[in-house]
Length: 255
Image 1 (cartoon, rainbow, N blue to C red):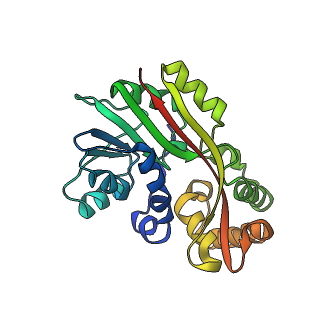
Image 2 (cartoon, rainbow, N blue to C red):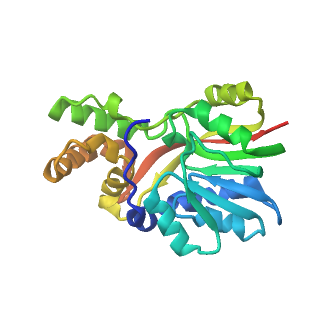
């Protein structure tokens, strides 16, 4: 695994709050019930773990980022949160369900993740997840790649931290692991950023940091401006940025 993305938990909560907001639909799909044991994989700052907890289910939140887990624990002291790697984890006691929102696309070793999920589920347990699917934020990635290449000769392909599979790719991995895929959908969800003109900057700062690690603060500002110019005609409408999100939502059962 490469270097870990540096999560800015404060920025995540204040400017990227739509991540949890949209995740509420995935909680509905999970349909947690009182007394169930549920693992929230890549729980971030804990907002959806809290939503699940409200139904009476017993939730454990797992995230790779210490900053996220600290923030989650502070916000929701009654929920059990732990730092751990979704590509390599085990639990003594199995779960009735594993839930994940907007996290699986950060994990390039999808087979390892699915093997860990499988091993941590009860028989008849379910895996319910939403994450970036094929073509997710394609316009932004294209603009970033072009600017980094033109301005600094940087090949962005080597820096891309994400894994955005199609339904066929991901269902194949699930089936190979033994899961029965009962629901899979891949849909467009143009997502409005906060703060008007500044919206794209928040996103680049909070979620695309891996592409700009080699750049100084002033170089970053220069690059962000160039990216905005390239992406504007496709993604900026009526004073706001709308990023070209494409999501994959799945439900898989462990028979």
